[in-house]
Image 1 (cartoon, rainbow, N blue to C red):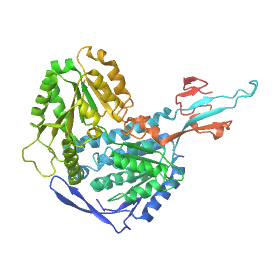
Image 2 (cartoon, rainbow, N blue to C red):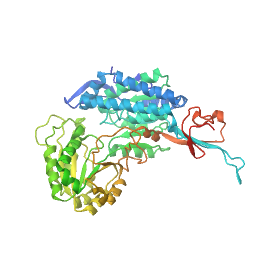
Image 3 (cartoon, rainbow, N blue to C red):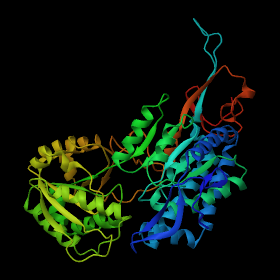
Image 4 (spheres, helix red, strand yellow):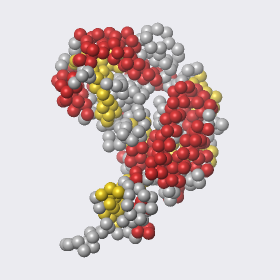
Length: 527
């Protein structure tokens, strides 16, 4: 049942005076449930509970935390149809997408549980003492990863499950040993409360300390600002716009004790289509990219917003074919009237730039809050000179840049802002002629795709979902996969510490049988 209240630890609370409702973009009506925005007192209580829980939570073993994450996954599945129905009514996304995202969310939680069960993720490193070393004795040093402390996670508008209440940031932070306070996204507050209820039940069933998780409602920015500025908060996770992520980053940097903000933000995900591929696979590529540009109404952070090719008859043909294919696709509903309003505004801003030509735009009547997809073209020189054309248009929109030659193509790539992905479309060994272009692209992105599409992010240890700014605020980390746990920990060393007082991960006997680096060698042996 949705109450509209906040979870302050395991207690439902609704002391605030500000209320709001979510919106059904498919029906273009407000949803029935009313939500109460968290008050300052509730925010402070949630943070202090999390700070207290941090101590007890870190006395739990990896296996106990794994049981907690598994119980969350089971609890989300047990919510059944009410979760799917609420998700759809608050997002306008179809049932198949809701169920797929639920599966991904559950899979992420179970992947982190398996990581904790095995235990080697802490990167235990041991250098034993050499007391008779000359000219000075060598101390015994033992290092491992330890959690940062309470983490604030901001729910994402475009992923009500996988990047929100129990999504990747929350799962990674809880796995790392950090209590989590979620600032629920106002567009899917009901979905958030349902998932939060499953987390709280799991925490109680597995005897986790009260305050290990809280869920706070917020209709605007005020709750988020208070959370980021709170001195007991030690890190922030965010998925959203460049403007929002940068604002949080700046707030965190201005604190007396600055804290890290791991924000995954905007990206136009450049796609380079090489000449031979255009000659040989024009129609196939046009069909493939018409689908990739419009899937999910273009509301993925990996949407291919920029296509680059070298001028030729084949490129001109590709523009024509893509234009024909993209208008055959029925427009789909965007997440919220505010989002489609921003899409139409940003699309028009791009179209109004000098030198830009509209190649195709869906022209038939559309249902309310459904986005008209568009493809535009521009000369390489114009693109280089006008950085407004480099900005993301969040939605089913893509720009084709027609470059004069490979040198201009490389120059354009070099001058792009940081991106999540880059894609190379190549036939045979054609790519070998463009090694400088590939090198330039590698310097601008977190992941390079060969002969594919950027949409679709596999959740696995080798995935890198992050890139140079502004794709993310720290390109050394990923926001997807079990390696994302590294964001929420710091290295910590014990020097000459009594063995019986060391964490199990660092004891001589290695009771957890994890892999460790001992005097430069990796093994799971005792010392």
